[in-house]
Image (cartoon, rainbow, N blue to C red):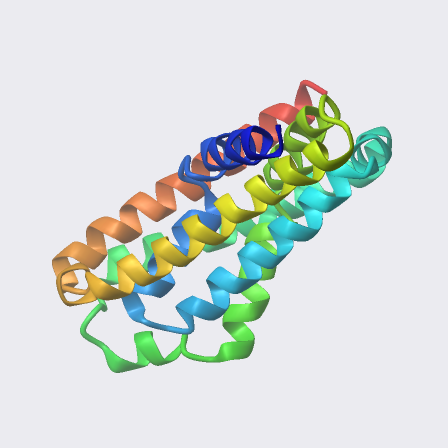
Length: 206
């Protein structure tokens, strides 16, 4: 039934998107700063939608077969994640959360767009979750049910990223306190390091 496929897509989509990663960490940080957080959430959702459609309509096998492309994206992702992690730990080390310039450095919409695209498109895990995993599951459905499943996963992305951005912004008065932001930067820095490590391991063991 179409409704069952839609519900399955919604649940499976949430299961792959909610676990904390580079995308979620960045949207969370932008929401706390109220710094173009809706823009960041929209970009994440749009990229997820395009990649899910790519997987559903057979693009996953094409990407997976190009080892050079996957390796390049992996190293590019590692480089970016290490740089972003270093930036977070630099804030922790300098404890400069009260400095206006530190906040202003992140207020450019273009910078937010570029960074959101980087944490999304330079992270092979995004392709694994959306194109490979969701695409392969969608292959078990036919016709209208396949479209319903894809719609469910896309709906999950929309619900999650906008809820994360709006929720972080609503809690900003508490989350934006200097002490809390320092803990959050430590957390984000560790997440970025962990994701970079998992990418490194996957490349080395490939």
